[in-house]
Length: 160
Image (cartoon, rainbow, N blue to C red; front, top):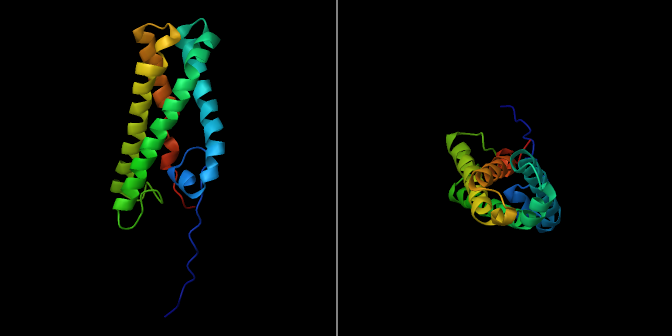
């Protein structure tokens, strides 16, 4: 019988916000924090430009810090749930390949959705309160933030 050489598993750690990155490389917080600040700033500026029409920089200054902090908290909560799912499975296949089956895909989808919902709620209820937007525009900006800044990188497999 012929023996085949099995290639070792190569892990790819994304530079955005992947739950394993912060677990395996604690100093990656230094990269992840400014990256999330930049993405949140761009999404807020676009949202204020589309729905706020005026006082874009004033509104950005009033809300960016809270939006960034609560967005990061939402990502961390979703990452912790993802790690919990990872430890509950016997093979540890959820982060290794989210598209490897129905269960890993649904667990990853649940984590990304949870982060998006938390981002929306935190932005709508807390971060955008002092921006002088009416409720409808505040809801639109919060929804834009939730869709644009949800951690879609959770769907990136850890192997190539």
